[in-house]
Image (cartoon, helix red, strand yellow):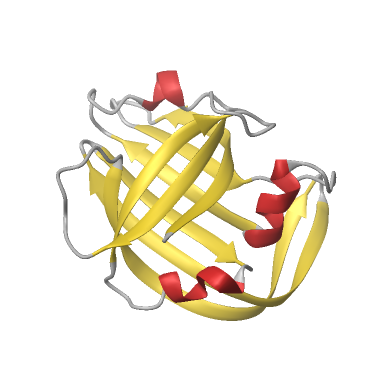
Length: 165
């Protein structure tokens, strides 16, 4: 089963004195109940992804423009494969929480109910990433249950409305 989150690039920074870039992506949010972003927010109410590139092969400057939207897909796998994936990562941590808070436009927004805080980490082809997301969709809780589980990670560009870019 593939689990999909939708993110927006919050910022992209060059680390001074090196060819390293740091991209920060946050989970999307919308108050418009008819929007795709609202639906994604209901399932993954908060979280962030940090991508650190230290290689000219993985240059995030052209791709991760602040304000651009990305689908992040994780699929549990048994072993490394040869298919075309962005990266492989491992489940680093899992914590159950009773509520989740997020700051949006200076206001704290609470999402009540049981959430699962998932932490994934990996590195691939000159890119290191860390992903921390709170998942409210109980149908996918069992996809993130054992520390050390291997996942393949796909990152696909999209738009605010959700069409493929």
